[in-house]
Image (cartoon, rainbow, N blue to C red; front, side, top):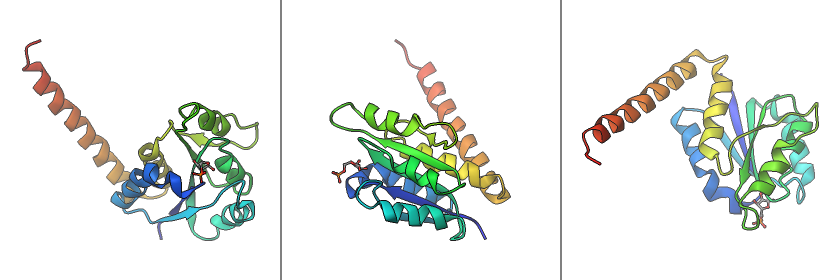
Amino acid sequence: MSKKVAVVMGSDSDLDTMRPCIQRLNAFGISAQVRIISAHRTPAAAEALAAHAAENGFGVIIAAAGKAAHLAGVLAAYTTLPVIGVPIKTSMMGGLDSLLSMVQMPKGIPVACVAVDGADNAAILAAQMLALSDGALADKLTRFKADMAAEVAKKDEKIRMEEF
Ligand code: RP5
């Protein structure tokens, strides 16, 4: 049975940014459980999710949060599963605050971190992690990359016909 991905966000205000992540996981046929859990507002729920994630069939945790974005790090503290952080764009620093809060983890508790608002990439990276032990998913990722390359080649061909 394929492993699931937990998509955790600090607030429902993160949901619109995270929709591409959920959609991409669905497109790869990966079962995602979406939760709203805050490192600060509901820390006990964060611990419970992460501490039992492996035994509950999850293979990767994706954590999206903004501002003092400790969610990914807190979840990583309670599990040996890989945790991918998605720093959410903020009004004050454009998400640099979220990015640094996630990526500057002390040694021993790593968090893989994608770009600010990089929801889609978080899903692709999670799929790549699960694909290490799932050949069918690895094939889907190979096709995904080939399709992307074909799309770029098509655009290249088109632009070469234009006069500038
Ligand atoms: C973080 O604070 C959330 O992840 C969100 O990005 C940010 C703002 O949350 P709300 O005040 O909109 O609930 O915890």
